[in-house]
Image (cartoon, rainbow, N blue to C red; front, top):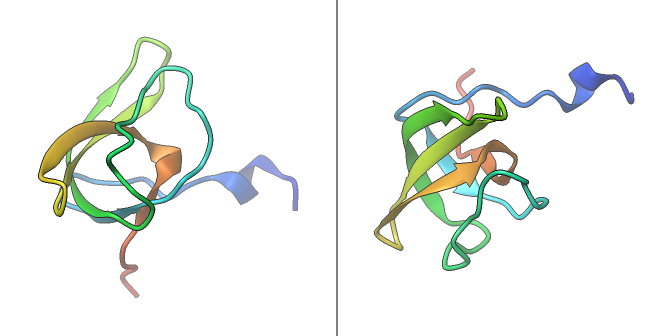
Length: 81
C-alpha cells in the first residue's frame, strides 16, 4: 500500500478537462487563490521547471484565467474506459 506506485498520478495531456482539488504546498509553483475547489479547466500547456517538476498551465473556464497549477492539485474530470 505504501509503495511509490500507489501514489503515481496519471499523466495529463494538453486538452484534458480537469478539476481543481486542494492538496499541499508545492515548492516551485504558486497558485492563484481565486481558483476554488471543484473549478473546471482545460490543460493548455505543460512545462518542466528547473527542479524537474511538471507545471500544468490551466485555462480555468468560470474564472476566465490561465495560470500555472501543480499536478497534485489537478484531477481528471472524466476517465475513458
